[in-house]
Length: 289
Image (tube, rainbow, N blue to C red; front, side, top):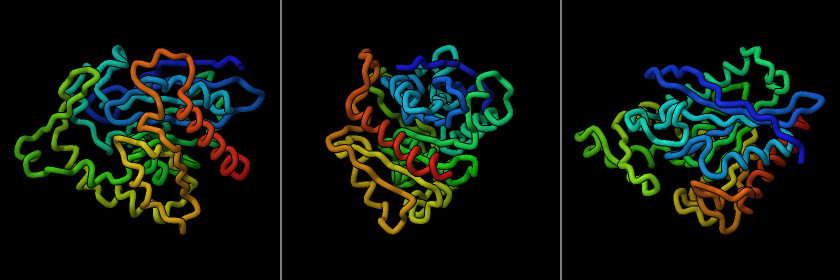
């Protein structure tokens, strides 16, 4: 296997709350610049969660540069990239902030003169998101002409239904808490999340947007997903040839991964997902830009 060059962690300023965005980059040097995949983590996630680094390495082996980023309000920090030390930031995260964070990263890519950028073909810019990050990826892919195609892993598709429930009680208290069994933390979600979803109900309405989605998109989903039911993909209609759904039989929400993940090999379902997305980008985008 070819040696992968790795750069990280880079730190950028978010547009919100004096928080920081962190990203890393990996690719295999070649004679010509390679396409770039931006990878977005999901809810209660971060860029180095579980087997995500192994997934990025596998994408690199398939001929892509991979940029994994931590959203500015995901609860981690540049000095503690895998620990939820800033629950106040976590509670104040929302889709609009995440979309702005992706924009900050893309703007940096197009403006930086760092040495590594010479290895990247920014005319072939793709984005992938896991779970909640899949919804962010689909919305950003629609709004940003620089993104040529979108892939998702176990994506949330019904944003309003998932993130604006129990409104009266939530609004009255101002906060509700989500238990993180792994870290044994009660993680706050402030009512501003629901307000952001309701204010942007058209912008975040994926069931409607995906009916006429104008770019190539591949949604990879496990049939045994315990967090985002595979049945949510039923909203994808066959009459939109741009959007495809591929099921991985028996795969769970993380495609066999967990955190921490101390095995130096990708779970079978994750490797399958990476190859599905890699083949999709190669077959439907790179050869026919």
